[in-house]
Length: 226
Image (cartoon, rainbow, N blue to C red):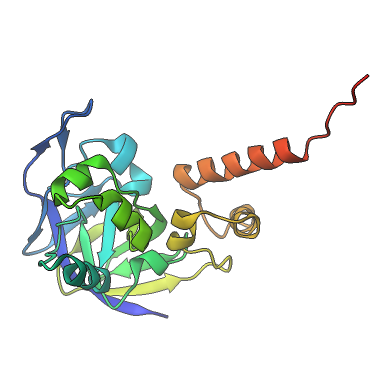
Protein backbone atom coordinates (compact mmCIF):
# COMPACT_ATOMS: atom_id res chain seq x y z
CA UNK A 1 0.00 0.00 0.00
CA UNK A 2 1.03 3.60 -0.59
CA UNK A 3 2.39 5.66 2.28
CA UNK A 4 3.26 9.28 2.93
CA UNK A 5 3.60 11.66 5.83
CA UNK A 6 1.77 14.55 7.40
CA UNK A 7 3.85 17.69 6.97
CA UNK A 8 1.48 20.03 8.77
CA UNK A 9 -1.86 20.25 10.53
CA UNK A 10 -3.58 23.60 9.93
CA UNK A 11 -6.33 25.27 11.95
CA UNK A 12 -8.30 28.49 11.71
CA UNK A 13 -6.13 31.56 12.29
CA UNK A 14 -8.88 34.15 11.99
CA UNK A 15 -12.18 34.76 10.23
CA UNK A 16 -12.06 37.03 7.19
CA UNK A 17 -14.98 39.14 5.98
CA UNK A 18 -16.79 38.19 2.76
CA UNK A 19 -19.47 39.68 0.55
CA UNK A 20 -21.67 36.58 0.57
CA UNK A 21 -24.61 35.67 2.82
CA UNK A 22 -22.37 33.98 5.40
CA UNK A 23 -20.42 37.20 5.98
CA UNK A 24 -17.17 35.51 6.95
CA UNK A 25 -14.84 32.80 5.67
CA UNK A 26 -12.63 30.40 7.63
CA UNK A 27 -10.19 29.93 4.75
CA UNK A 28 -7.31 31.47 6.73
CA UNK A 29 -5.63 28.35 8.15
CA UNK A 30 -2.15 28.18 9.69
CA UNK A 31 0.08 25.28 10.72
CA UNK A 32 0.05 24.46 14.43
CA UNK A 33 2.40 22.53 16.68
CA UNK A 34 1.48 19.54 18.78
CA UNK A 35 -1.33 17.01 18.56
CA UNK A 36 -4.81 17.98 17.31
CA UNK A 37 -7.95 15.98 18.03
CA UNK A 38 -10.00 14.71 15.11
CA UNK A 39 -13.79 14.28 15.28
CA UNK A 40 -16.59 13.66 12.72
CA UNK A 41 -16.87 17.35 11.80
CA UNK A 42 -13.14 17.99 11.50
CA UNK A 43 -10.39 19.18 13.79
CA UNK A 44 -10.67 20.62 17.28
CA UNK A 45 -9.79 24.31 17.10
CA UNK A 46 -10.89 24.66 13.48
CA UNK A 47 -14.08 26.16 12.06
CA UNK A 48 -16.16 25.77 8.91
CA UNK A 49 -17.99 29.04 8.35
CA UNK A 50 -20.26 27.53 5.69
CA UNK A 51 -20.89 23.82 6.12
CA UNK A 52 -23.13 23.87 3.05
CA UNK A 53 -20.08 24.42 0.82
CA UNK A 54 -17.00 23.54 2.87
CA UNK A 55 -18.04 21.32 5.74
CA UNK A 56 -20.25 18.65 7.17
CA UNK A 57 -19.22 15.06 7.70
CA UNK A 58 -18.34 14.41 4.04
CA UNK A 59 -16.11 17.50 3.96
CA UNK A 60 -14.79 17.37 7.50
CA UNK A 61 -11.12 17.76 6.53
CA UNK A 62 -9.41 19.16 3.45
CA UNK A 63 -6.06 17.67 2.41
CA UNK A 64 -3.54 19.06 -0.07
CA UNK A 65 -0.26 17.64 -1.35
CA UNK A 66 3.13 19.29 -1.03
CA UNK A 67 4.00 18.39 -4.63
CA UNK A 68 1.04 20.46 -5.81
CA UNK A 69 1.96 23.31 -3.47
CA UNK A 70 5.48 23.23 -4.97
CA UNK A 71 3.95 23.44 -8.44
CA UNK A 72 2.01 26.56 -7.48
CA UNK A 73 5.02 28.10 -5.77
CA UNK A 74 6.87 27.88 -9.09
CA UNK A 75 3.88 29.17 -11.07
CA UNK A 76 3.19 32.08 -8.75
CA UNK A 77 6.77 32.91 -7.80
CA UNK A 78 5.92 32.92 -4.12
CA UNK A 79 5.87 30.58 -1.15
CA UNK A 80 2.79 28.42 -0.61
CA UNK A 81 2.97 27.60 3.11
CA UNK A 82 0.67 25.03 4.71
CA UNK A 83 -2.83 26.42 5.13
CA UNK A 84 -2.62 29.08 2.40
CA UNK A 85 -5.18 27.23 0.30
CA UNK A 86 -7.42 26.67 3.31
CA UNK A 87 -6.28 23.09 3.77
CA UNK A 88 -6.24 21.31 7.10
CA UNK A 89 -3.62 18.75 6.14
CA UNK A 90 -0.47 19.22 4.03
CA UNK A 91 0.73 15.82 2.81
CA UNK A 92 4.07 14.60 1.54
CA UNK A 93 4.44 11.51 -0.62
CA UNK A 94 0.73 11.11 -1.40
CA UNK A 95 -1.14 12.73 -4.27
CA UNK A 96 -4.43 13.78 -2.70
CA UNK A 97 -6.08 14.55 -6.04
CA UNK A 98 -5.13 11.14 -7.46
CA UNK A 99 -6.69 9.32 -4.49
CA UNK A 100 -9.62 7.05 -5.31
CA UNK A 101 -13.12 7.92 -4.15
CA UNK A 102 -13.76 5.89 -1.00
CA UNK A 103 -10.09 5.18 -0.41
CA UNK A 104 -9.24 4.99 3.31
CA UNK A 105 -6.15 6.30 5.07
CA UNK A 106 -4.74 5.87 8.54
CA UNK A 107 -3.02 8.94 9.96
CA UNK A 108 -0.79 8.37 12.95
CA UNK A 109 -1.79 5.57 15.30
CA UNK A 110 -5.55 6.03 15.57
CA UNK A 111 -7.23 8.26 13.01
CA UNK A 112 -8.86 6.81 9.91
CA UNK A 113 -10.31 8.96 7.14
CA UNK A 114 -12.05 8.32 3.84
CA UNK A 115 -11.59 10.19 0.55
CA UNK A 116 -14.91 11.74 -0.48
CA UNK A 117 -14.82 14.45 -3.16
CA UNK A 118 -12.71 17.20 -4.76
CA UNK A 119 -12.44 20.79 -3.63
CA UNK A 120 -14.10 23.31 -5.95
CA UNK A 121 -12.41 26.75 -5.94
CA UNK A 122 -14.75 29.52 -4.79
CA UNK A 123 -14.83 33.32 -4.79
CA UNK A 124 -13.44 33.49 -1.25
CA UNK A 125 -10.42 31.51 -2.45
CA UNK A 126 -10.06 33.98 -5.33
CA UNK A 127 -10.10 36.95 -2.96
CA UNK A 128 -7.65 35.34 -0.57
CA UNK A 129 -5.08 34.65 -3.27
CA UNK A 130 -5.41 38.02 -5.05
CA UNK A 131 -4.25 36.40 -8.29
CA UNK A 132 -6.05 37.34 -11.55
CA UNK A 133 -8.34 34.54 -12.75
CA UNK A 134 -7.22 32.38 -9.84
CA UNK A 135 -10.37 30.25 -9.74
CA UNK A 136 -10.00 29.37 -13.41
CA UNK A 137 -6.26 28.73 -13.14
CA UNK A 138 -6.65 26.49 -10.11
CA UNK A 139 -9.44 24.52 -11.76
CA UNK A 140 -7.65 24.13 -15.08
CA UNK A 141 -4.52 22.80 -13.37
CA UNK A 142 -6.61 20.07 -11.78
CA UNK A 143 -4.51 20.05 -8.59
CA UNK A 144 -7.47 20.47 -6.29
CA UNK A 145 -6.83 18.20 -3.32
CA UNK A 146 -9.51 16.18 -1.58
CA UNK A 147 -12.04 16.34 1.20
CA UNK A 148 -12.07 13.58 3.79
CA UNK A 149 -14.68 11.94 6.00
CA UNK A 150 -13.58 10.89 9.49
CA UNK A 151 -14.07 7.17 10.07
CA UNK A 152 -12.18 6.86 13.35
CA UNK A 153 -11.45 9.57 15.89
CA UNK A 154 -8.11 10.22 17.51
CA UNK A 155 -5.27 12.73 17.46
CA UNK A 156 -2.82 13.69 14.71
CA UNK A 157 0.30 15.82 14.52
CA UNK A 158 2.87 16.93 11.98
CA UNK A 159 5.28 14.09 11.32
CA UNK A 160 2.67 11.35 11.52
CA UNK A 161 2.72 8.62 8.90
CA UNK A 162 -0.17 8.46 6.42
CA UNK A 163 -0.93 4.96 5.16
CA UNK A 164 -3.44 4.00 2.48
CA UNK A 165 -5.49 1.16 3.98
CA UNK A 166 -7.90 0.36 1.17
CA UNK A 167 -8.09 1.07 -2.57
CA UNK A 168 -11.55 0.56 -4.09
CA UNK A 169 -11.76 -1.48 -7.28
CA UNK A 170 -13.69 1.13 -9.31
CA UNK A 171 -10.52 3.10 -10.17
CA UNK A 172 -12.23 6.54 -10.17
CA UNK A 173 -10.10 9.29 -8.67
CA UNK A 174 -10.85 12.65 -7.11
CA UNK A 175 -9.38 14.23 -10.25
CA UNK A 176 -11.75 12.22 -12.45
CA UNK A 177 -14.74 13.54 -10.52
CA UNK A 178 -13.50 17.13 -10.69
CA UNK A 179 -12.93 16.97 -14.45
CA UNK A 180 -16.28 15.31 -15.08
CA UNK A 181 -17.26 11.66 -14.99
CA UNK A 182 -18.00 9.68 -18.12
CA UNK A 183 -20.72 7.03 -18.23
CA UNK A 184 -18.30 4.18 -17.53
CA UNK A 185 -16.84 5.88 -14.46
CA UNK A 186 -20.30 6.74 -13.15
CA UNK A 187 -21.39 3.12 -13.55
CA UNK A 188 -18.25 1.90 -11.77
CA UNK A 189 -18.96 4.15 -8.79
CA UNK A 190 -22.58 3.02 -8.64
CA UNK A 191 -21.56 -0.64 -8.79
CA UNK A 192 -18.97 -0.16 -6.05
CA UNK A 193 -21.56 1.55 -3.87
CA UNK A 194 -24.15 -1.17 -4.49
CA UNK A 195 -21.60 -3.81 -3.54
CA UNK A 196 -21.00 -2.06 -0.22
CA UNK A 197 -17.38 -1.27 -1.10
CA UNK A 198 -17.73 2.50 -0.69
CA UNK A 199 -20.07 5.15 0.70
CA UNK A 200 -20.56 8.01 -1.70
CA UNK A 201 -20.78 11.59 -0.46
CA UNK A 202 -23.92 13.68 -1.10
CA UNK A 203 -21.89 15.74 -3.57
CA UNK A 204 -21.06 12.76 -5.77
CA UNK A 205 -24.54 11.28 -5.45
CA UNK A 206 -25.86 14.57 -6.81
CA UNK A 207 -23.52 14.31 -9.79
CA UNK A 208 -24.65 10.76 -10.49
CA UNK A 209 -28.34 11.70 -10.25
CA UNK A 210 -27.82 14.56 -12.68
CA UNK A 211 -26.03 12.28 -15.15
CA UNK A 212 -28.77 9.67 -14.84
CA UNK A 213 -31.49 12.24 -15.48
CA UNK A 214 -29.69 13.55 -18.57
CA UNK A 215 -29.30 10.02 -19.91
CA UNK A 216 -32.99 9.32 -19.34
CA UNK A 217 -33.99 12.45 -21.22
CA UNK A 218 -31.68 11.71 -24.13
CA UNK A 219 -32.93 8.14 -24.53
CA UNK A 220 -36.63 8.86 -24.04
CA UNK A 221 -38.72 8.00 -27.13
CA UNK A 222 -39.91 10.95 -29.18
CA UNK A 223 -43.71 11.08 -29.34
CA UNK A 224 -45.11 10.44 -32.81
CA UNK A 225 -46.79 13.36 -34.55
CA UNK A 226 -50.04 13.33 -36.43
